[in-house]
Image 1 (cartoon, rainbow, N blue to C red):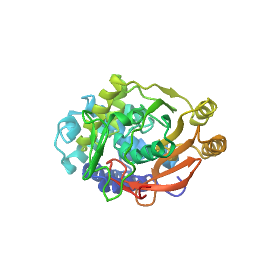
Image 2 (cartoon, one colour):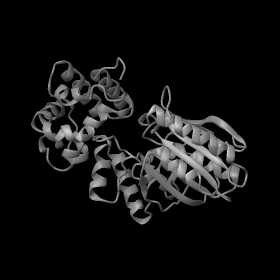
Image 3 (cartoon, rainbow, N blue to C red):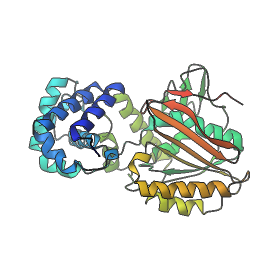
Length: 349
C-alpha cells in the first residue's frame, strides 16, 4: 500500500461510493475510517491486512463480509437499515448497528474479510458492447470470447442482454435484462450482428453463479442500497441457468497461453477483461503482455486477434481496444463503473 493507510483506503472508497450512488456505504466507510483511527473494532478487523496490496480493495472486502452475514439473515439489527435485506437506509442508525456487528461477529468476519471482491458487474457489458460490435464489424467473423478474471462468467453472456439508448437499441427485445442509457452522446458503435462461436473464461477463484453459495457471494459484494444492481445480477444469474458458461479455475497467464495456442481460423479471437488488471500481480501482467504481443504477431485477416478491456482511468473507466491486423490500440469509450452509461468516442466508418 506504500504510504496509503487503511483509513485512507476507507475514505477513498467512501468517495467513490458517493460518486457512484451509494450514500449508505459512503457514510459507513467514512465512519469506519474514524473508527480505525480511534482503535475501534474496524481497526481490530482490518489492521492484520494493512499491508495487503492496495488493489485488493480491503474496504470493499469488509463491506462484503458484513453484507454476506446480513443477506443470510444473521444480522437483523443491521438488516433493517439495508435495502437489499428489505430495510430502509438510515445512515447514523446503520453505523451504530454496523459497528456492533463488528464486535459481535469478529471471528466470522476475520475469515470472510480474506475473500476477494467478486462483483461480476453486468452493467459493464454496456461499455464493452461497443468494442464487441466494432470487432464484429471490422473483421466480419464470428467471435471467440476469452475472458480473464471472469468471476462467474456473467459478462460472457453479453449478447443475451438488451441494450437501449435514446436513439437506438441492440440485442434481444425479449431479454429479461435491459441496460438503459448505454450511449449518452450522439456517437455510437456500428450496429451489426455479432455471432459468438465460443465463450470461455478463467478466474483464480471462479464462482458458480447458479449455486446458492455462488449467488450469495455475488450478491454480498453488491452495495446494500443499490437495488437496481441487485435486480440485474439476479436476472443475469437466471440467464446463466439457461445458457451456462464454465469458468476455469486458473491463473490468467497460464490459461491464456493454452487458449491462444489453439487454432482459430475463421474466427476473431477476443481477449477481454473489466476492472481486473489491478488484481493481477506485476509479474503476471508482464507475462500477459508478452502473450498478447505474440498473439498479435501471429494474427492475420483469417484469424484476427483483439484485446478489449475496461479498466480504471483518471476520472472513471476507460475502454480500450486493439484489433490485429488493422486497428491500432486506442481509447474508444469512457464510462462509469457500474451503470452502462458510455461516452463513445469514435465516428462510424
